Length: 123
Image (cartoon, rainbow, N blue to C red; front, side, top):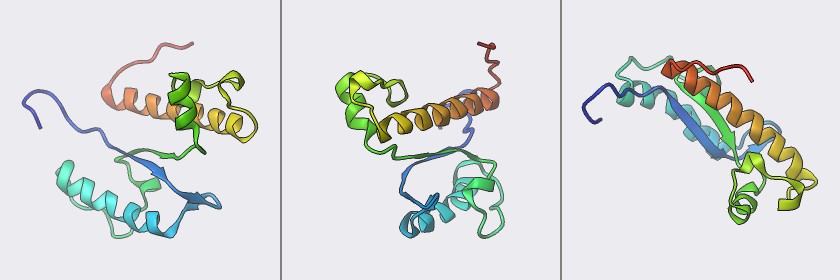
């Protein structure tokens, strides 16, 4: 890490495949390795107990899923996935995915701000 007051505040698991509200087996195997590797290699901490799930790992900031193909729509509209509108092609299942995406990124932003000591003013 560069010199200065920089410090890692956690990790994000992105684009894991989800089936029936849980990661598919291939992703799950990798996800089970992250808490121990992050703790020892990045945070300089003792490894957590074997089998610690990322959902219970205090170093995990968020798990962000694929969002059903919103990325191509966002690239075409030149806006964030969570800001897509029906005029951008976010209709049907995509509209629901946009709402989920917004909630997930809002929660992530709040977590990052909290860990960085940044106070977010109320809306």
